[in-house]
Image 1 (spheres, one colour):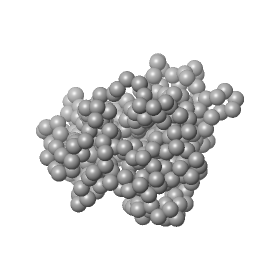
Image 2 (cartoon, one colour):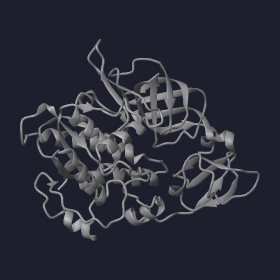
Image 3 (cartoon, helix red, strand yellow):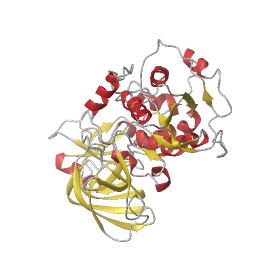
Length: 400
């Protein structure tokens, strides 16, 4: 289970058929509704992202798996909710029934483990702060789920993301823009998208506000119209990363020195995986604070702290860089850059270092540049590209 099938097809691919990744929330449900009303042949796909062999729903979810790992709908109702939980799958089924579209559950648990959960654990243990939601969008939805949708005859994949994808008239490239609703914009999740992925992607919510989406759902009497959004990471429902790392990979915290930016020992940390750049609370140190985490040295097992000004940096190196309006960065590029989801943006220059690696220099220092997080580039509303932060310059790096 979990292995991709060759791209042979259950049916001919149709440009009128679109598969909507339905999470059981109001956004993806309304996306399916909009596309159905626009005349598309819509099917709903819901991903099952982890095995739960000990619970009742885990056994039931495995009852009717086929070689394609597409399952029929039959789920228990009395279970706690989190994103992508069995009850979310049930919600997606009810919405599909209400709209009048086919609904399939696709088992991607093994691939989700390989491409999202394991890298999440590994990066935390390496002193980085990963973004598993980005990896899910990048490797699971836009890649694997899109290919499964193709297998089912769908030319397009759609999701409930607030983002605008458009085709440029002058050269035919597909471009990504911020959503109309700036408070819900999720364009930063698409910096790694390829032209192949974008040409098969529909973004019906890009021109909608969240308020209008809920009103559309209410008008259609969708059962999830008033459903609250999930805020936690889907595979850590209690948001307790420390417990998860202990249970998942047997992480045994190794205490070590907390040092200031001059290298002076001022305390003891409880294990580097418990800290992230910019963190202030839970450090357990006194003195002329407050102190903030400004660096993590896994080789020496050091947690480096400084004052508020030390949290700011002006330069970073990003790996796995991708650009959407063009294939390769040939020279310096002026952009505004963002280093955290919904974080502050700053004017910056991006310059190529070597293949898939770029240097980003900010005009003014920016707060909490964090290895493992994404840096995303914009020119106005146009998403230019991005990369994964691997290192940065700042006072917290001087000790390392």
